[in-house]
View 1 (cartoon, rainbow, N blue to C red):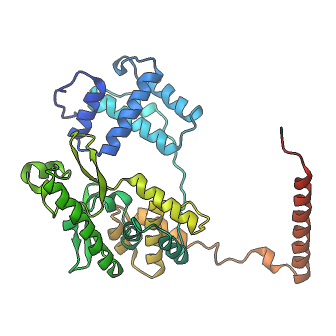
View 2 (view 1 turned 45 degrees about the vertical axis):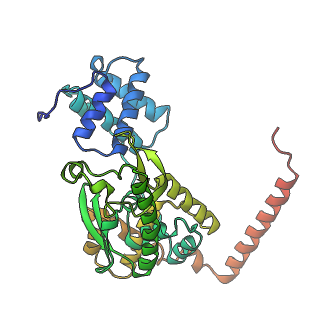
Length: 358
């Protein structure tokens, strides 16, 4: 097995050692939170035994409990397994000969939920004014929610009409279009953002969080206007890693709730989340005849096979294939309509007279 470059931990507590190693590997805060959660659950499941005293059998029993009793999804199952493998390999430095024998669930291949252009227009028309620009940008540039929330002022290039997405998924930068219809709304959003930035500077509030390397190279960048958030939160909060009270960007849950409320008001009978707008962006570009490789670059996919998933949405033969029901004689189709209508009416009458369960 490949040797792991490992520093001596500064803490004696296992979870602190886990967090320290995750930060050394430059994993995201979301990954850190998830891994710490699953390691804690694993230890509690086995009666607070130290992981050094356990191995493949205990890991297998814990994962079986998650799948059989907790009914977790395959993705959650894989995340828990990844957390435990990281613990043993990266933190404890334990050889894992049993890793090859642990079963991994197969994730279902699902077609993404995509909104029609009419549904997107209805959704955007029903988003509250505080989040209208952000939600429009999710669709207009095909951004992930985290990418949109972490945009800095310097990332918007109004002259070239582009947005630079920094350290996106896979720690890669990319350039996407800045929709011309959002130019003025984004400039108004920057006016609001600058007011908060000026207030923080007047109140001597610590600057925004920066990538690790920038903190060392540009010590005053956190307080500069160029590095400020495009979509800052209205209130200050405690940085979960540094414990510094500073201004964060808007929270994902806040935007997600705004999208859910808008979809209900728009009466869209689909599960609409922030990523649905990204799916719709890619599908609508394919509809317009944009090359799949160009869409791959806009989305930031490493492999074009990931982007090809959207071809299944527009290339499905189901929409263009007539059902055999349509080929039945007209008289028979009319009879079917009458029978269905009578059955529905009789079912309503029967259910109306039934007493509810006690």
